[in-house]
Length: 303
Image 1 (cartoon, rainbow, N blue to C red):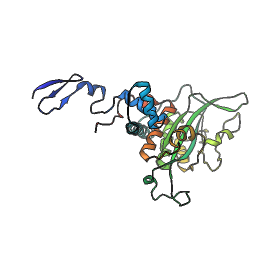
Image 2 (image 1 turned 45 degrees about the vertical axis):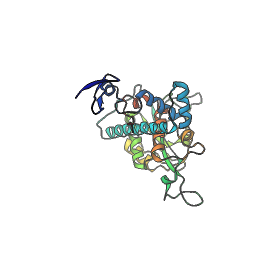
Image 3 (image 1 turned 120 degrees about the vertical axis):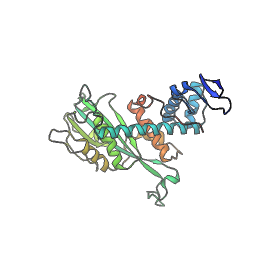
Image 4 (image 1 turned 90 degrees about the horizontal axis):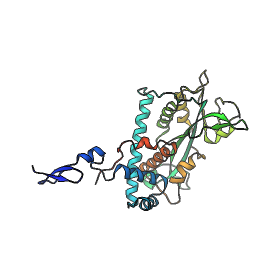
């Protein structure tokens, strides 16, 4: 075999044309169609704007031209990788292989707001599903959303105030039980076993809490809440149960994360595409974006 130099410091076989590029392997781009930096930019842009507009934005800001379809494929790959990372984290937390440390300083209360909204789908994704249309067929699939945030202080009217930058979001098109597990794991990660009180409520019910004092279990507009333990804190199991049985309704919490990107005029989604963009938007809104991109695991291979 005769070795020859390749771009990137690699070597290859002159006879078969195949080679090795050690630097590509080191950078995590071997066999990939996009560099990690470009994939990150594409995912950020695709999470913020429709694919065609995102492509124009990247071309204007970075001088890199990608088709709208290329943006779509890259964003779906990034969202799929983010979902796999979240699922792995959920399994590790719920199985106690990972025990999150309590937050410091320790907030007084942790709220879990449950939300849900329908996202328009291509016909193949709703075939055979009953819906509210005049012909009895579904046009949408449900995205379940949870927002977790803490509260440690009151405003001048003695009403609870959400702690700045304390909100984290989860979204999924999966059934209720896996959604409940996701929320239970995130609650533990956020310190639910250490915070004085955990409250599970509907997004629209957050304003109904009596001012100036912690709220016990209650139901607003059919939304069940978790039952507190004798110490006043709900367990992650009860939180998961509450989330699993909560009916889906479109609430304001879903609008900025889901509605402003996935429910624009004329949009129709596949389930993988909607799930990917919802996940990317949740990570961005949660301030956990960099945890997705610590390593180039979201790359798509060259066709």
